[in-house]
Image 1: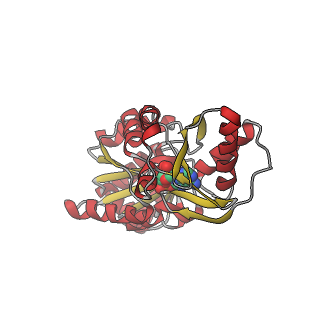
Image 2: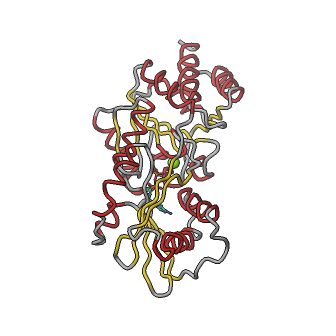
Length: 298
Ligand code: ADP
Ligand code: MG
């Protein structure tokens, strides 16, 4: 494209809340064949809220509150949005600022968090991760499946290798997601979801927004490889849309990386395009701009 048509395209983008970094991405976007969308914070609002919580032992001798306090104490050390949801929930249940002391806190990327409280090992995270560590999750499985089918994320809590409780965390789909996915499919693009969340929850969100291709339980360090696979499988030009630190390698690997402006700085600097408001309609507009820009010079 000519410098003038690029300037016009970039300017129109800015007017519509779409920041385009270089001429390359504007020239490439009309060739995109597949769009990979992160779930949390991209398709959803990224404001998770605890809606349900149960413990294995029930409420005898105030166990529910005890375990909730332990969970909140661990999660206070995490910057994950799910962690904030759990801490806020504990506070709403009257557990305020007297959390027990946590030692050896560790975040296991895309799987969960762990730490020691009074010498006991506390682990909060995915069922897959806890099962891999040898924790038997059977007691709460049917409850988890029910919540997951409601599109809720279900962090599990284990203490010293024994399952103790389960959270259900809801994160509503952005109103713009459903319409944007519909338009992208109409434009002939393959629309794919990529998430670290479990299969059931991912599928429930995918159903809600009309996505048929779902890659779930993908760890942060595997997300970029998934993009590479999609690029190589059919020689496709692939766009990735994401918001998190976890998404940065995948955003960089994609032919066109698009960051959600309400997300992390890391995602934005790894991307070619930023959708300032986080409205997914911006993906459609960016591709249309690219099409118009390239048409102008032919
Ligand atoms: P996403 O791809 O949806 O952004 P992540 O890769 O960050 O998800 O995390 C994947 C899963 O790991 C979450 O759905 C959650 O079950 C678990 N997890 C990660 N961090 C935490 C945490 N701080 N507390 C509880 N669970 C967590
Ligand atoms: Mg995300």
